[in-house]
Image 1 (tube, helix red, strand yellow):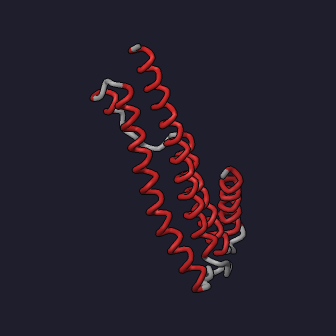
Image 2: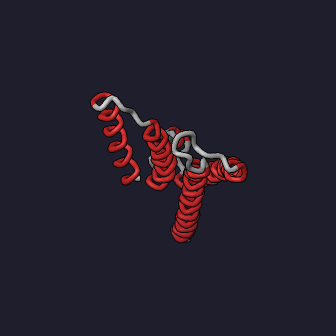
Length: 154
């Protein structure tokens, strides 16, 4: 992600120099920059899921006071998000395979358009994996909470 972001900055700088200083723009740079931007976006989507930086509300802790029930809701949310990422990933795979099967190429650089589509597959696969790891961690936490609760009752 860092490499793609840095390359995007370099390409944009080169395009500005070529267009306004040398007065000779190269439209292939615009295609390559879109490719890098798409990869940064979808890798960032997976990274945000890993870091738990995605948008989520905090009203649950205000409404539900029992930590066990709160953890159950969070597990349910992780499973729903994982399911949604699977559905979107399925459509991303379907679209990418169609692009690759048709042999479509980009306009200026003549690169396979499957390179752009592959970013979606990687991003959604990362999301599914991290939501799965999150759900496993939440299940472990629920088991620990249940064991602790049972021991305190005895």
